[in-house]
Amino acid sequence: MDGYAFDVTQLRSLRSSGATVWIEDAHIAPAPPDGGEVTFDYPHLQLFPGFIDQHCHGGGGFSFSDPDGAGIDGALQFHSHRGTTSLLASLISDTQPNLLRQIRALVPYFQRGEILGIHLEGPYLNPAARGCHAPEALRNPDRAEIEELLEAGEGAIRMVTIAPELPNAITVIGTLIDADVAVAIGHTAGEAEDVLSAVDAGATLVTHLFNAMPPMHHRSPGMVPTIMLDTSIVCELIADGHHVDPSMMRMAVNLLGVSRLALVSDATSAAGMESGGFMLGSEEIEVHDGVARSVATGALAGSTISLDSAVRNLVSDGVVPIQEASQCASATPASALRLRDRGSLVPGMRADIVGVSQVGEVELVVQGGRVIRRPGNEPH
Image (cartoon, rainbow, N blue to C red; front, top):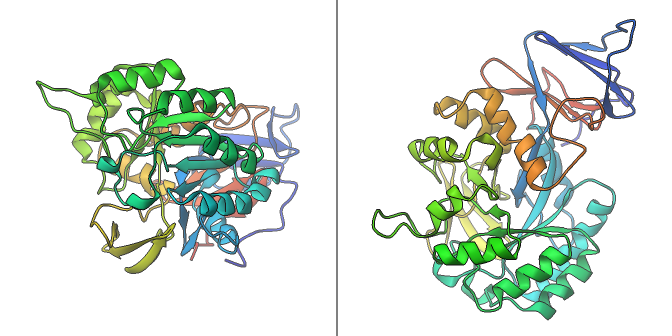
C-alpha cells in the first residue's frame, strides 16, 4: 500500500466541474472574499462527500478481526483509497475471549480517530438466520457479557446487531441504548411485533435489509414491511449485485427514500482480491467470480466490494442517479450514526471528499483535508 499518500497537509482549495471547495484546518471553509488560489483543478470530476461505511469487516486481504492488529492498517488503506474516508470496523460473532482480544486491538484506532468505532455483528443472532456466523459462536443476549464488551471497548463500540426475538434481547437493547450505542435489527427470524418491541426499546437500524431475515409473503408479511414502513428506522443495503436484486433495491428506495437507505459494503478480507480462500473472523470463506460464501454452509459471507462499487452499482442498475447514491453512502450513514462533522460538503464539516468521474469511478480522495489519492494513481 506504500506510495499512495501525498505530502499535502495544507490543502486549501479544490475545483471540479462547476464547484470549488475551500478547506482550512482539515475542514470545509467558506469561500474567501478574494476568491483565493485553487490548489487542485479537476474539471472532469464531480465532488461528493467522502463515503461512510457502517458495516465493513476488512478488505485487500486484511481483516479487522485480526487480534494482533497486523491487518487493520491494510484494511483501512484499502478502503480509504477507494473513497471510504470513515468506517466502523465490524466484527463477526465469536467467543467472548476472542471478541475481547479483537476489540482491544481496535481501541487505539478509535482513540486516534482512524475508525469511527466498532460494530459488533453478533454474537446475539438467531441461529435460524445465522448466514455464515458459526453456530457455536451464537448465544442469547446477556447483560453482564455485553457490559464486559463495552468496558473493553472504552467507548469504541458504536453499533451492535441483535436479533430482537431472542431471550433477554429487549433488556440488552436497553443497556446498549443507555451506553449510547446504536442498535441494529438483524440476522433474525422474528415477526413484526419483534421489530416493534426493538424499536420501542431504542433500535434505529437494520443490518443488510432483506438478507438474513424472513422474506415477505402477501398473507404473512412478517417483519420486512414493518421495518420499511417505520420511518424511524434506517436500513443498510448491500448493492454488490449478489445480495439483493435490482428490482428489490428500487422498491426499497421508493418506500424508504435515500434518507433511510445506507449503502454498506459488508466487505470481508476478500474485497478486491482474486478468487480463493479467506477468513471472516474464525470462519473459512471461499470466493469465486466475486462472490464470497461460507465453506461450511454455502451461505453468502459478506461481499468482495468497497463502497465505491456499491454507489456505482446503484447507479448502473438504474436505481437512483449518482447524486442520490452518494447520499446513501455519506449523508444517510452520517445521520444514522449521529455524526455531526461529516457527510456533506458545507462549511464546518470535515474535509472528506471524493472526486468521481463521469463513469462513476473514484479518482480523487481527500481525507481530513489531506489528499490520499488523485487521478493517475490507481489503488492496487
